[in-house]
Length: 404
Ligand code: AMP
Image (cartoon, rainbow, N blue to C red; front, top):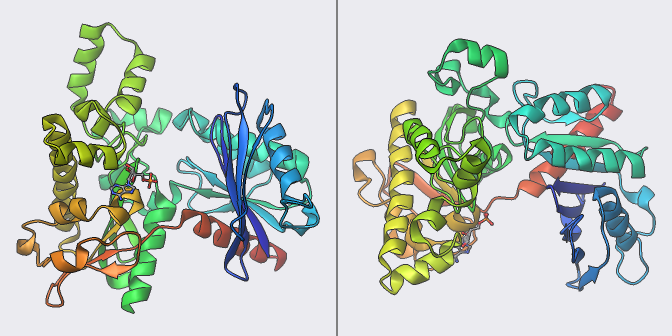
């Protein structure tokens, strides 16, 4: 079965074409700067052939025409006809309380995604552009939506509610939803598979530390709590997002700086986090280099970053009554031994004995990085969100065909 996985942003389309039965990626790439000057498509084929094609790409539909044309081209292609694509899986950001899992995209569910746009005005409309365009271009091919939020729909009310007037929850759905669900779900299940333990009886903390970052407490196979909230700005310190801030500070900043909602949103999402503190970069590698050279703000931003993750680990261990498995994933979690080590420092009180030697120099591979005698197993599990989307898409299409 060949499945095209799409992640549509406002001016970009990331894609991967999977041959899911073979467990392989036939082609992957990105269409960038849609509707802007200098738009292009970058593609990498399974055999390493790489190409960057420039052209005027005015909207998502022309972006798809460009990329589908390349997939069937004689020189660069990987399939001989578009009818070889069996299904399309979309990464969708916000499913609100409507979507508890992935779904087949028909008129009713697409309307459901549209209705969630108020909750994610930057993301859902861009995701929807991808759905509409593919419906036009490949009307007979089933499409499936996989939500960043749905894994966290198991959170109990005492965990997902904000202590704001209850009417705001009823009126606008103001509550915590959480994101990165496909990643938290995948790495936690994968860890249990590697350890050959029962997923449904473990207490797991998953740290997805990438440019965006979130941490989740998973108890008995269900998300109990997660650090991102109504929007992805809550929780951990991120590349350019602030994470937790006193709401009172925000109203004060608005007053002092005389800024409106939209400028505050930009400040919190684009100019804060590691970039905002270090003043250097949102890229952890650059900040770590500057810190190693003695830059004080870079050092401070790393200390704050690591401290915030530690604080959440402690909180989630308390929330679950202990922890059995701690997992690192995402660009930083997978590739930064130093961050992993600092985050796990002095956690022996929890029964966590970190193995510094094993951890040193390890990047991007599945590995246990706690000592044998450690009560908590610490692991690196590289995430693979696109693979999860492809397999969920296959499952839903197969269920549909079987009439379930
Ligand atoms: P992601 O959003 O998951 O792609 O992660 C991106 C983040 O991972 C960026 O901040 C990168 O700097 C960081 N990253 C990637 N490789 C490394 C590395 N070797 N050491 C530290 N951070 C890294």
